[in-house]
Figure 1 (cartoon, rainbow, N blue to C red):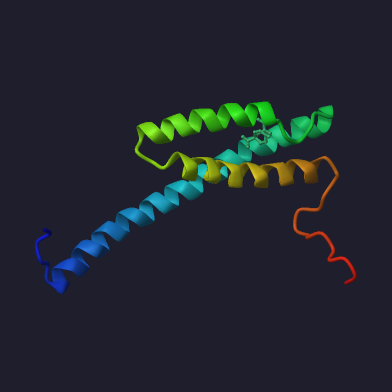
Figure 2: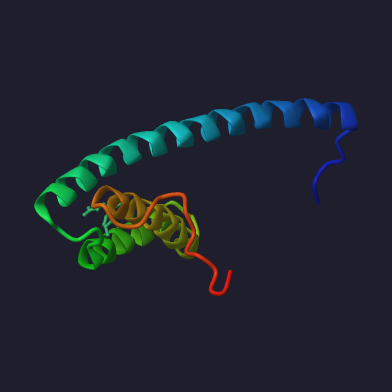
Length: 113
Ligand SMILES: O=C(O)C(=O)C[C@]1(C(=O)O)C=C[C@@H](O)C=C1
């Protein structure tokens, strides 16, 4: 059983934990910004050389690697895979945009609209 904690103490602990969560979220934003800077370089290189925006073989390697890392770190591998997929989907949209294809912010027009 967990010890009862009065609400003043609970609020104090909550504020301390949230301070740390805020730092982690800030680090995540910075890490993502750096990742997108590098994938932007990849996109420019791919557009200039005519290489395809996506590389499914590379993605399979990344997924296998991240799933193993997640398991070791006691993070749900399914979540790690979904998270990577979410990021890579966005990167591919940027690559396609750089290659002169699909606009970044426009959705496909609704048929009949
Ligand atoms: O490494 C590449 O070829 C990339 O374009 C980068 C990246 C990624 O975001 O990691 C994105 C799309 C590819 O399908 C594979 C990987």
